[in-house]
Image 1: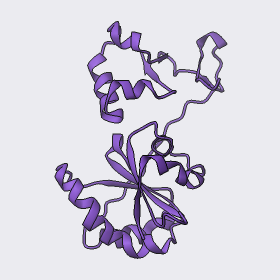
Image 2: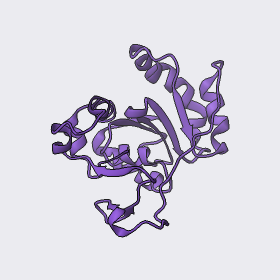
Image 3: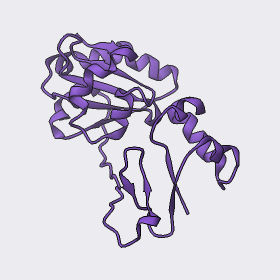
Image 4: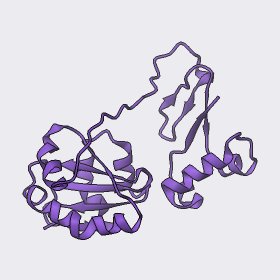
Length: 197
């Protein structure tokens, strides 16, 4: 039976999400970013539908053959999730999947609704670069990050937002509020960087 987990239960899906590269999913599961998690069976979790607040979308993770998701997800969406989306005036929603194994689940869940497909392109910064160590910035865990030519990576600290040294301060604070709800919640996150020119 499909169940929504409470925030204190989010870590119960970590065994599924650890295998995924999607950083937004991991941020929700860790409690760093706001979201919601619906699972196929609270006693034996094999699949999850994860609401990523900042993206205003979902991600399906885990076993695409999960029987509760294959048979119950459409009804659950119609009775529990769609009314909430409509209250937010959302007439369409993005649902991401890791691979084509979820195709049957998506089609069943959508029913007569139209499905549109797209590909997400994720750009990664690589540390193989000819710039010197003085050009790098490190994450809190010590991973070096080299900015693209003509850009710089800055840690986002409260002082940076208070000093108004950013040309687009309102854009940055709006994005922080969108993804984390409040600026204070953002500062509880351990990984805060911005890229600028």
